[in-house]
Image 1: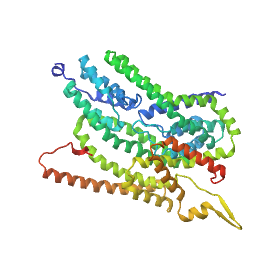
Image 2: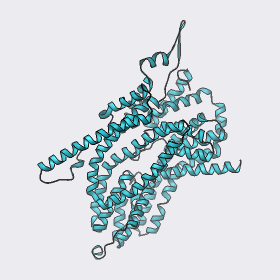
Image 3: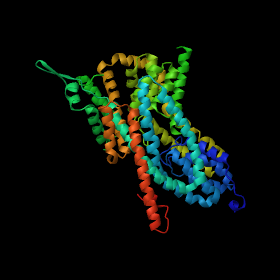
Image 4: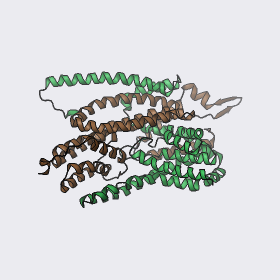
Length: 271
Length: 268
């Protein structure tokens, strides 16, 4: 067999190339059927060609990677690094093991990765830099941009980590990451609590006239009960609505716009 | 139209198109409003206005994430369009929200179309693999980024070419309560992102931390950074105490059971 006679040794340059290709293409070939599958196949194609000198093996290996795949790019870098090590060692015999490793890890690792990369990090950076921007300060945006560039290189590095440490590390890391994600969620939720009070802007400065006594609904009633009462109530309402499958985010956004328009027309809200 | 304006038009369309490619892959500027808004502001030569608009959309977007292939309103495109319209027509934040927001909402539909077309592309690539035409397969992949960039570049181009005049006209016709109402909506809309966010996160388990954050902000007026630090302190404590517990459990079970089964981490 081909594999036994001359095994190709994957170089650092090969890995770097595959990692760069993946961390560029990622969702740029995203489709509803195989999701990130084509991007994975395309990213691994050059290095796999070197491993599989036999055309039929190469074809089969690529088709294996064309299958359904979806995970956070950070975690994918590690997973694909690990599968590359498997294919380098066992050739086409690793096909089924590669597939099952990918399908078994992409879900749990995406859960952790998405929470950190797409939810917590943008929430914390977004709220800080968003406020700075409102005060006319671009510094938050610049720091965020620079941090993202650093992250990109970390992702390339993680491909190597997956390649050298293999599956065992990813599995044990998954366990630690769960605790890490929970800890990060604590930080995230504290920030969210603060955001509810400051970012959600709703007030009803409508005045009622009772004979000679004027009562401002906002300062006279709501603010007396508790600060940021309306934002807290609105958040609870929207949270409950979004829990209902019928209420997609877009529909909820349209509802908020409708409430704002009607409220402004009636003079309850003021711009 | 002056030469500078034409250059600005082109750069804004390129920025909008590249934004999607970046969001799908590199995630360096991604579709985050403050980052794309700052760049758009530099292009339009009015950073102050751009930052106000970018900050507003950024706060609206908090918590809005497109996860697992789900589609979410494109606040990044809303920001680019908003900055362009507001600086070109000199109408400020009101027109930015009035024009940017609907465009950002409509862009979701184009994303769905792009992903359906990408399905054909995926099949084409795979059939080329089966035909051993690997060179072709490798080249075809580049159609992906081009396709996805159109999802934001096309709406941007439409607005750039026809927008300013149309917007100036519409703003003259539309009654004040509508533009005021949209500004009110702009203040309220971050609630949708926050509501979505709460659904991704373990709210029930960690509810007290939301209350802590709320009280510090609402009653004590501590800024976001301060609250983030308080949250970090709690997270730090949680991480180390839970890690310690986990290793204790691990060593206890390792000494009790002879065979070390390493696959039991994911049995939930």
